[in-house]
Length: 188
Image (cartoon, rainbow, N blue to C red; front, side, top):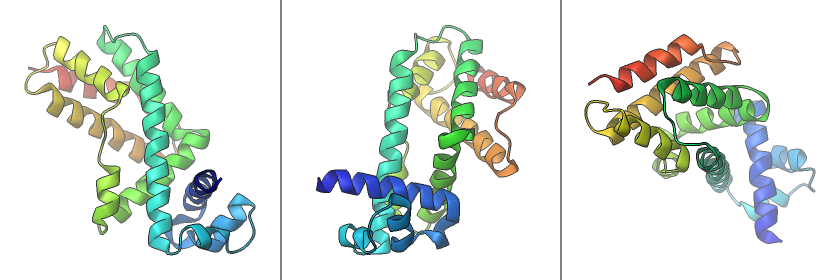
């Protein structure tokens, strides 16, 4: 029950962070968001730092599960258009509904991690089936240079487009922008 309660609280903390930002992330706000009695969050996470660390760990776990499932379910990428389609789907997921809220929390945590090495370490990009699908595509299609480095750069650029659209209130990323990024990654 304790681990389940921690998960509920971490998920509620993600929602609070998405809605109220870093200043609004308090133990009391998480108690309210989780519909639990006052003091529950502080009983599980004594400090704000502990709460924030739990939130980031949960956020990364949810993102990893999502990317792993998407990559595992998709057939191998055969064309640049299929890769662009995958990025467009990821952007829609990250810019709408519950995914938008997680994106708001993720980027808030990324900014906070500049001053917090523990958070920065948790947020380091991880291997998953989605990342591997992109790397395999780039390697198979003769992109110049190291496929791992190209994959990192391409995914960072897609992430940057998503952040830009999040900041402007858009719910999609222009297909032309994604096509340009993929074409650049495939250049020798």
